[in-house]
Length: 296
Image 1: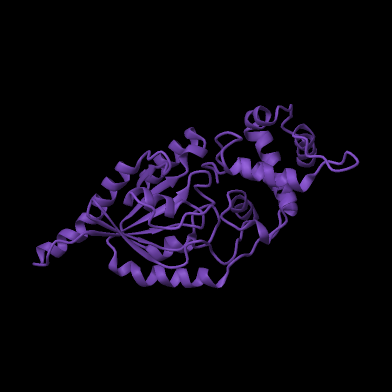
Image 2: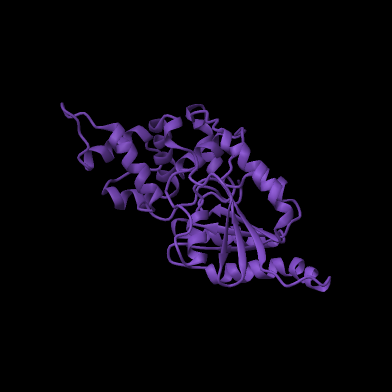
């Protein structure tokens, strides 16, 4: 379990409380527009299917028809992704995995959206109103891939894509060819992370900006997690040998030496190595990794 791997290191996890003003504004934006949409697509990073779910969004969405889409499935452990999809479906949700880069699962997502919105759109027609497009809101935490998905659905670069949390700051309506209107909303985090393990996983996946906390202790914990759960990716990428109980600092220094990240005097350049490891982890170069499991 991920808790067992991290529980002894809780004291080392930096306290992360990041809730800039635009987050509260985004919350209000979602709440105000829920009444005019037929369904909601909740995007969740497949690497953090538990930690990446905003509890505030669940409260705001309520009983509105919802599709759960696990994004970045190409970066996540395929076996665990399938287990979570089964779990969400057993809870009554329409759930699927998508890859916005390759287009995997996009057609199935569109079908699920249309099906979820049917009840509302048919009700309008039955009351004598003109047929209209399905209206769907897309929600999720920062850097979950909303803009990439919308661009894939619309077939053009309609929204600004940047691998940096907090880029989308206002709502955007995008009409796509299949007769569905999509409402994009800014990524929303919650104001207080009760569980430090949730916070650190959000930081690892870049849902939280790197500038607000100390990277080195965070990456040490990431390396210890990977050494226990996914050692093959580390060993293959950096051509090193590690054991499940190796200290994160030791692994960090070993990688620095192996990659030639050395300062004058033969001292490992920890800062440079730290940023390199984070970047390569986020890009999937350390293998397919899921940070949560069903026990979480």
